Structure formats: C-alpha cells, structure tokens
Length: 481
Image (cartoon, rainbow, N blue to C red; front, side, top):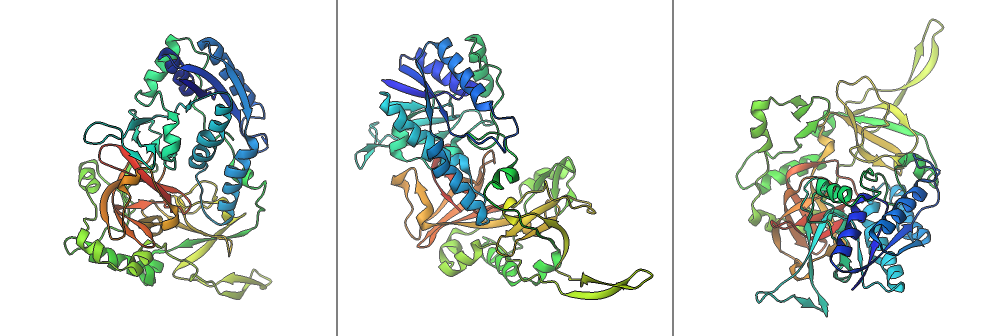
C-alpha cells in the first residue's frame, strides 16, 4: 500500500514516516506550502523554507521520495477567508479544525492521490481503530467501513480534538502512526534514527501560517476602529432578568433542591493556586472545592421546554448598560468638560481599536490598570464596537453552563450513535484544545443539541468547536457553538 506522509519538518511527522517505512509501507513524503504572506508572522518570511529544507533532509535520511505542493489558494479560500469572516462577525474561529477537514485530509489527500497514494498519514497524537460488531467484523454503513477516533496515548499531547470534523470517508484514508506513543518516546526514536528534526521545537500559532500577532494578521482585512471598553459590575447581574432566569432554571434542574453553581473554579496564575469567588483556596480545602458541581436530574432535563433550552443556552446581553453624560467645570478657570455619569452597572474604563480583535476570556492587550485582580474580556459587540470586561477569574460574566449546537452544525463521527429528538445522554466534552474533558449532559431537540455542563465553563467563545467523547476515550461527534 502506498502512503503519503505530510512532512512538515517537525519531529512528529518525521517519526510517522519512519515508522511506516519500517512497517513495510510504500512511503513518500510531501511538504505543503499553504501561506505566502509573512507580513504578520513573528519569525520572518523564510520560516516555511526552513521547514521544507528540514523535511527534505528527513526524507533523504529515511530513504523515501519527497515532493512539494502549493495549496495556498485552497488554504486562503477554505481557512483564512473563514477566519476573517468569523472574526468580523464577532466570533472566535478555530482554523486548525478547518485546516484538517478542508486541507490535510481533503486538498492534500487529492494531491497525494494524483501521485499514486492510497492513504495519507500525519503526525497527529490520536488513534484510529476499526468499529467492530459483536462478531468482530468491521461495521459497514452506506458502503463505508466505519472507524473510531480515540484520544492519543500521551494525555499532554492528545490532538484528537483537531480532528473532530473528519468524516468516515476521510478516516478511511488516514493513518496516525504515532498516536500510541508519548512525545518523549517520539523524540527518542528520532534521536536513535538520527533524524534532522529530532530536536526541532513544536510549531506554534495558526495552522501553516505560524506564530503571528493576531491583531496584526487580522488588520490585513479588518479595519481598526476605536471603541469603548466597559467594565461590568456585580450589580448588573443582580438586576439582569436573563441572568436570574439562568440561575432559577439551573436551580429547577437540580436533582435535589439547592443553590446552583454559577461560576467555575479557576487555576489562577496570579495567586499560584485555585481560586473561588476571587479568593484563594487553601490547599486543605481544594479537594472539596474541586468536587463542587451541579447534579442535574435527567428527568427534569427531558421535561424542560425547547424555548427554555434555547434561552438557557444564550449568553448575557450587556447592551442595556448605557451611559449618560453631564457637563462639569474643571480647574481654576472653570473650563467646561463632559463626563459620564456614574452607573451602578458598569463603567467606561478604556479604549480599544476594534471589538473584532478580541475574544472572550482574553486578558492580554487590554492595557487597563487600577485593579487588584486581572481584567478579562467577557463579551464583545461588533455592532456597537464595544468590549465588556470583568475583574477576576470568578467574575459572573466569565462563566456559562449551557451551549447549543444548531442542528445544521452537528457532526457525528459515529453516525450509528446519532441522537434523536428527545434523547438525553451523558458524555464528556471538550470546548477547546488541551482542555481536560468536562462531564456534561447532551440533550437533543429539534433546534439542535444542548450541552449542559456539571460545572460552569470559563471563556465560552462563539465560533469554537465542542467535541464529545465516550468513557473509553472515543471522540463521537462535534459541532460549532
């Protein structure tokens, strides 16, 4: 069988090619260039050329043919344009997920096929396994053998999340040779084989673009526009009807009567440990804090109306925070000036150069001082060009318990497990790369899948992907929220 390995110049894809060669496959390597414009990159305009050079050295060392393909047109149309469109709409996209679905296992695979490849292989830390029936035979649906995607063996490097949008057809043409290895084991294999990439650092930044200054990158198409940064106070949530609805609805869904958990426990860089309600948690109490969660009743989840599910999944709207101006006299000459009147719900604390350049949960680049705790973005409004921020890791606006995957955005890897309207299931969910899996309920309704987490999640940003897993480490499906 002829296999094309996507050689990136990194150690992971290099070892993937080496292992396949040792296993007897007819292997060739191919380097793809997906980006030309280096204006926003932080490492200069020749980084891809260095990667290609290393990839070619690796191919020579292993003893396999090496090819080059330029997929920059496809990448710009399918990934970069998508990024710009999402950011301009005030959403936070995940280009790496799209890069895998649209480029590595689509456009790249088609290029490899033209060179005679039967399959493509990458250096992803994940595992592929056949879906077997009770007799040990591989399940076939609609003429396609069915495959499972499992987490990588290395918990610190698992990359299954990035593959959450792959189809069964794409999985049938893919190999992941290093998914059963840990990163140290991969580097050891590379050192023993004396591969030129053995000590090469892991790539960072946007897939195939590299380490970039994101605002600078986005300003290539999105124009800066000055707007206000509004800090939201606790008093707003006390008066806000939607926040009270979320609180009361979560309380009504609990197995036993009680107060629902509304904010998450965060590992605080400022305090060096866990914090809860902006207060450091003593070491002896952290076990009890970590056990805090909402225990929901599946029967009550089933009984909740579609209208209430939709409302529960919606974020808080901060547009009600308005500011009136007043004229006052300043200085010895009593010069007339204008200022905002005090508002118990919030305060204008700064300026920014475009709401589309910020994402929920972000704290860098705000340049807002005068606070004891860190300031985080809790919402953006691209229509009014306003950024809303809150102080502290446990700010009420930084946590959400429920999100919705619209029906048209649901993607099942395991189509045999697809949920029907009314189904309520227990899964583990990841809403961003490297996040520990979170216990949650999935509820299917005509308008989509609602994901209700046991513990509120921090920094939920529209436009990202949620992926759900079974208890045996298999990724079953995903969708953009």
